[in-house]
Length: 591
Image (tube, rainbow, N blue to C red; front, side, top):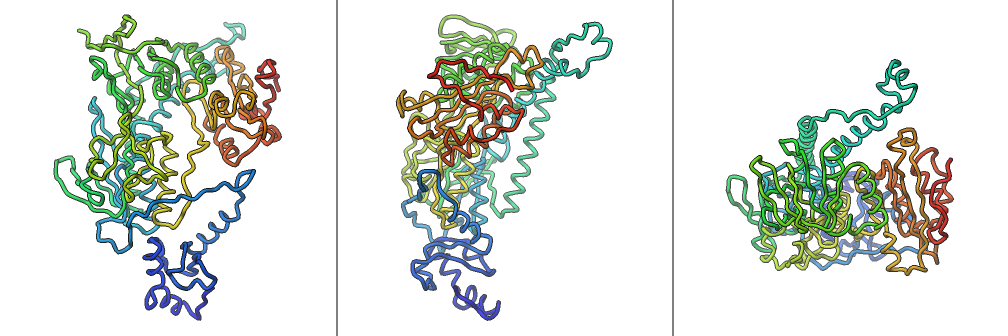
């Protein structure tokens, strides 16, 4: 500890004469230290004396930062030992006295890029974000915020909610007595029945969703300004490892130089390659369509395709899904099958084992789709959702020695560092990274802390929760049953499963025909919970807490020894007891 008789003496040592903080910032690449002016000023050093800046191994910060560091240091690791790792990165040549325009330039103003930019700025870095939306083939454009905010999670969840409300009006409200008069009750002898489908305005839904999105675009721009991050609405192309050429919407060119760069450009939908494939729209377009989508063909069995098919069907559209092979590749096969069964029961039609071979306009302005089996039909809208590719084709990666994966345009990295040390990558454009907004946000923050905050903590891509917002929602974390068996062997895995009827469905005849489902994948030798799966209402809300438990290394006994909240669907997970290997019925036994 170093003590001073007065605040002025402390500031003379820290800032003015000795300039201790500047030495710390320069030698450790930690710009946050150069702006620290209060007491205390805390660090870790290699020796007990530790007053030589060259001996400092990590700058911690002030009072709050030190308390946070202590809490983290004292936090126990997962059961079975501390397996926390450090990110060991190649030196990237950054120094605090570089002569470039910015300490950090971020290509892409999506969730990950914005999170990384604000975190780096908070740590003292001079940061700029380049963001420019290239129009989709159908001409759709949008504002700052990336895929999630504009053409992904946010509008999708709102339209999914619209479908839930429409289905609730039809299947639930009359059975709860909502809108039922005394006369209707008497005329039906006290028996309730479903409502007719409600009138639904696509124009109103689209308008309100887009207005909400535009509000978020504005908030993001304000947030960057308040966080002192420079926003540049320009398209960037690498010139060399420290220079990007920029072009604005009027064609004006300029250059920007940087010490470090993060590529966070995300991905774009993979287009159909069949004849007439340009007649299809994608998830870049569906949420802002001016015209009612009408009868819709969704091409693909990805979660994007099934989510769109689900909410379109839920708001009353005639929907068909063309499936080449299997539903929801990469997810648990049993759960994917149950989702398909639920959607079919709700009126979504499936063409299985086919792909479009030709799309063509009819005289009426509709689209005729001919399929690989020779069959055909006419639709108002064809939505292609067959996958996504990294948006890297115009970045000039060859100028910085980066070769993207030729199959998907994505960039390989270790600890988010590419083959060019001062160029990093996060989010959907990183090869092997889960295409999930919270993953990009977390990875961006973690990377900025390593680059400018002295952290060595890597991003943990294991056991990330996700939810598929199909008509019956699907929440999952960890291993699928198939992957667990492949890794641990059939005899090394036990599966506990259960079907149940959510209480809120129980007095609706239509809802009551459906069932929720949950299962736990458990390693036999240790009892460790490897994976958890849930089909039912509010799947994302149910799964989030269990995701934390799995991340902390919980066992199946930890789950079943937890007292559940009654009556909830989340409680069903805590009462799992029937194993698949037993052959006993997986039906819930009641309260």
